[in-house]
Image (cartoon, rainbow, N blue to C red; front, side, top):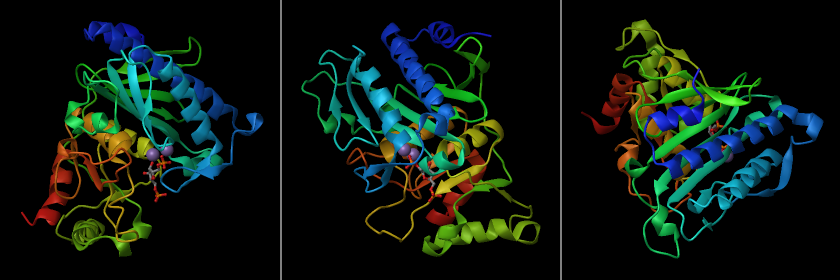
Length: 323
Ligand code: AHG
Ligand code: MN
Ligand code: MN
């Protein structure tokens, strides 16, 4: 099986990008080790602080952020970084060519129950001008030059899109290398599986309520087929399942906090996942537009997310657009 750097070289990526992706993989290997030591290393539980989103930080949110931040600041090709756990962007090296946005630990509510969690990252080419500002990050997701996640599950896996298509790598605990285990990930266009937090149903907008109600009617309803439901509560895990066998995932707009349109963050959750999903043949939308076409307004912006199997996502969008 081919090692990660070998595959990236064969895709003819620029050497600086290969080095950066290898650095991110190294950081995620360290995070995986911390997660697997769990209570033995005293890394579970709350850190005792809140992040910029007003969410209680877990110790592992902070540990994962510190690991990636230290590695990226030391990486000459990185101009600046943005993280879920950092209020402002952090400037790195003035000559750096890349901007990196990341969610250091996704699915934090799974940490203390030994559930699956992940790390998500998004890479842009840095603009020419210095000093770097938040505005430099605010570009449509279609301009990402690479995006991916690491899933800390029963196996540690990396999903990556950089040159061509989407690849899966599995961390081999014997050699400690990420090895290529799926060369061309492709999402089936149709599905009978959906992922959504049903407990929020009463807060959704009417089109999403109608769409899910029709799925729940199964064979007896307009869809004329039964649907199964899955919800891991870690986007990395839910998206991984969709990349493996199809499905539709949504964290939709809801009216619990009207000034926050959705829960997931555009720059380091929705955008990188949307690039992976589109490159694997799927669709990724808010309720009205393709996620990758959105013009971001700030680095911690939230958006509704509907992504997965192409035909199913477009069917769901038709409830929203009335077409
Ligand atoms: P994070 O842990 O980085 O804040 O992200 C958690 C997100 C996402 O991974 C998941 O899909 C969603 O929150 C789960 O939300 P609920 O707990 O509302 O189901
Ligand atoms: Mn997250
Ligand atoms: Mn997170």
